[in-house]
Length: 379
Figure (tube, rainbow, N blue to C red):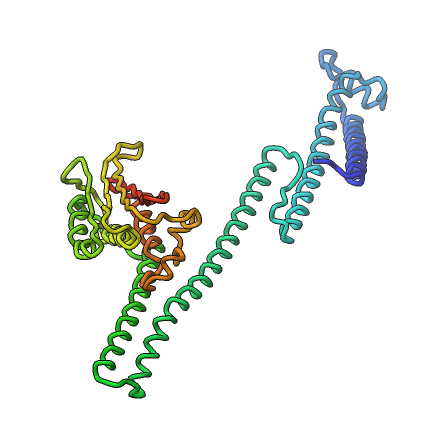
């Protein structure tokens, strides 16, 4: 750390004062020893190596003391001066760090404490930087959460308001008897009922996304057959497939694939992928579902690819396809039954299984790839 001129002068003054105090202490010690020797009858023994020194001190003959003794007395003095100056220098370093902290606390969160410190203080400075970075990250996360909440309220309000307006409108027609026949009134009731179902669909999706993404719903892990699960879904979609002259083809190297997971939740994942493939796929094409098991460092992984032919997803869509309430413009122009939460829910369920989900798309084929561990490891 670079010292200011004032700090250098203070250190120099500290050194002078410390040396002056040492001289006074040495002189006082010398006088005490001289008084004690002079007042006590010491026998003069020739073999006593300190005899001459005692005589010199008693006779106050300082200049006759051997120089080696001055050297020995100078060592602790220099050590004490160094200790005092080091303490003062450490105080300057701490004051410097505190000043830098005050500057950071004023909102300059990208600022870093400057200077070179010893290991002990450098560890403290690094910890401060880490704490500031963590605080900034927490603030950014809080800001993002608040923004997400605002977007959530806006999107939910928008998606509920449209069918709700229709429900109120048709019920108002019935309330005011503005219909020409019982069949027309029944048609109004049916339309209002369908719009109410659409609102319930949105609320159910929103509730499921919240419980899955926050982990408030515990996954019910058990062994199940993935091939059998996909075959059952294939049967469930058969009527809709026939309407669009489409088919689902399962390709797997084995007829059975037992793995561990929450089958009910995973059904929701593939139900959403099949629904999207059916909705955006071309008629008279096949939805291809490929299943394979690979050995990786973390263990056996089950990879499932769901591909369909049709209009691809835009580059922007690929970046946001798993975001909440995201829908391509073409999707908004359709029946309005899509909530934009399906793929977000699917991603949350896959992540809860310690897996991954991704998507690739071009002008002809769109492929969703899911990777799941075959056996779930306990935490």
